[in-house]
Image (cartoon, rainbow, N blue to C red; front, side):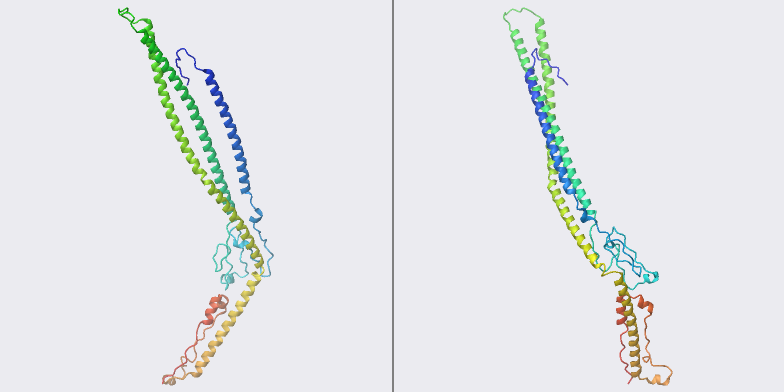
Length: 385
């Protein structure tokens, strides 16, 4: 808003102010071009850095999916390494007899959602490191964008402070000119009011005196108005400088996160390489063990366990028969038992426990061990004296 100030018939030094404003415009243009060049350079460097971080060794991250092999004569297929990972569906456990499957003597290989006695190999998801790397890159971009926005805001506030400073300088110059004009008017009025003749020439105010008093009153109003504008502008400049200080503090706190984010990115990259090496070694081990621990091995173990269970049941039966025969040979009937010869001695024919084929077939190795160790031999019979 232009100021309507009476300069008391004197024009301001337009050449001085024109040269000053043109110099400031040239300097501001130079600063803007320099800032634009620095921003373009930083953007290119940031793009290169983000491009290097986002380069991923896809060959290490691609899991080798083992294709389903041909089923053997039993209808089974070899377990692959993909059965241990959640992103691969667990293979079905094929069997011709569902009833036998429900009561199988041997535990199945635990699937990905089951817990077994053995510890299955665990590995993070292939997309976990990619997600973490993406989040770290997004965090870096956010820090960069926040820093740039704060820098732009600080630059705009500094430009505003500079413009307000120029306006404040102009107002101070105007108030100084107004005060100088007021002092001159006061001096002229004092000089005019001097009495050269002791006699009173006029008893009323002349036209020149009235005009001088009016000019003095206008100058005082201009001085008061400019003083108010100067105070308002000084308060605005102080508030803007305080805001610049607070924004610089925020920018420093944001820039303090840059080293931590860079360290985090390095750690993620190193862990990703380690995970790739571990996954490759795991696949090699599982490929080497695929033929050793396959369906043929499970079938052979099942047949041998059934044979062992049948032999154990036969041995237990024979053991019970032999023990009962020994007890019968060494037993002596008591007086009460002699009276009734029809009733056999309680220790003569002990009850022999047999194991059914169903229990043998559906028993686990732990159950077979309990069958072998159950029913210990009885103590020898001690006849009454």
